Length: 389
Image (cartoon, rainbow, N blue to C red; front, side, top):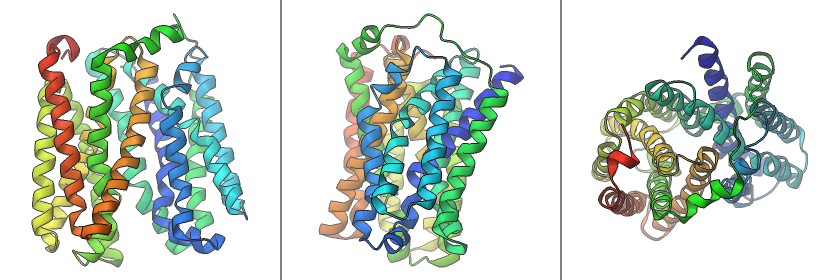
């Protein structure tokens, strides 16, 4: 992969990080947002849930509609909309205005993320392409995991306006870097909409969709309540909690590097063993949740596995529909958001009915379901053909 390709992939990763931070960063400051707008925390939560809903619904469709347009123009349009939405959010005095300012950019979230993954997949030979995809997914993971503590930290030492400015700066930097350093990328040999959507006729595609939703739900249902769990069960608070969450975020970045190597060596075995390994981590977590040292180790492992899961999911759907990369990557983004929504909802049920210690049971349930769909794909389809190494 030449230096120009490396630079483009790096710019895309920064763009994905900024977009994911826009989506997930406000999770840690919802109580502050509620106070700022004089509303309940549950209503403030619409800033997250509405964004995720828009992405989940539009994810499979919009990347296909934009698949024939010059890719640089689509990147600039998407990032420009995010910058505008970020700026309006910073100065919005009314909650409904802030809600709309987040909902509109959400339409362009799957477009940009799908495009970034598609460009990465064509950036060199198979090994180089996998490394490029891993870099993009690293941006996704970092935005989801590091975005929350960074945004929360900025808000705690300054204000929510400054916290949201962080996302605006990231997206602005990505926009300028794209404008200055990314060459024009006209689309060669555009695929028809019908040919891309035809992958939905394959049972393999639907098995892959189910796996992504179940696997994401398993991780998200626990991840969404991690900070609360560490506070109430492990009794970690203040700076110690920030350090543990930051360690978790750093581990997730390292997990991307490991994921790329594992998938390149043997994708099918990596997928089959992932639910087992994650399940063992959940079991250790359940029985040693009150022990600080144990939880530091568990959170490190959880961070690594969090990123491996993202990489498996992306590879799982694109290998099932290699003839429609934009649509497949759109499905990855959409299904991941459905998984986050479902996992968080089920985790909330376990929390409400049984206590926060039992959120891990919901995760184990979804891991079992994902393992079943993985084994079905392994047995029904030739892994050499479907997951070429």
